[in-house]
Length: 168
Image (cartoon, rainbow, N blue to C red; front, side):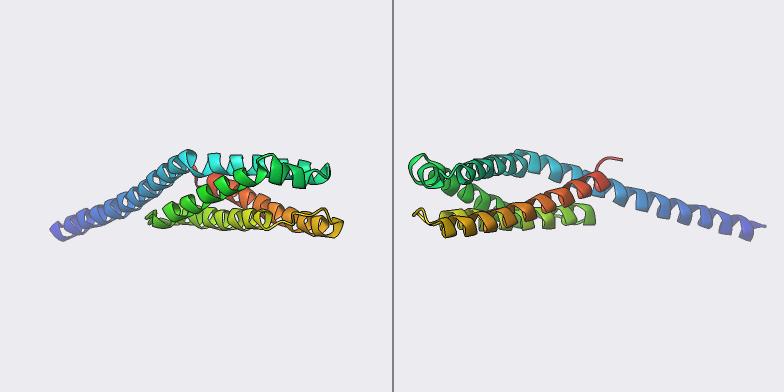
């Protein structure tokens, strides 16, 4: 009888440890994910918004055939350089961010991909032609649109990750 009682107590302790051990890890995952999102609120999300605002200005200038004037005379290039520097700083900071759990790591990988693509897009604009040849701007517009489309897809994936692993 004592033996059955002892086995029962051991069984209860094991189940208790397994249950609360898993719950504790889940709680740590949630805390890490939430803290990472808060860090991104202060850095990445505003930078992403600023970058897309800049890209909208690029689209308007390309559509209105005023890209050269806007980019080289009205401050577009300086804004491009400033944002590109902020993207590179954010990339360095994010690479140093130490995360341990899958949800935050998935989001981090997505953000890094976005930052790399933002940087590529800013480089594309930085190296844009300064003359008014239609073919150059057609190619620029095509390449630029492709990169913005890729950024949009990555942004949608980021939203899915946040929805999936956000507070439940």
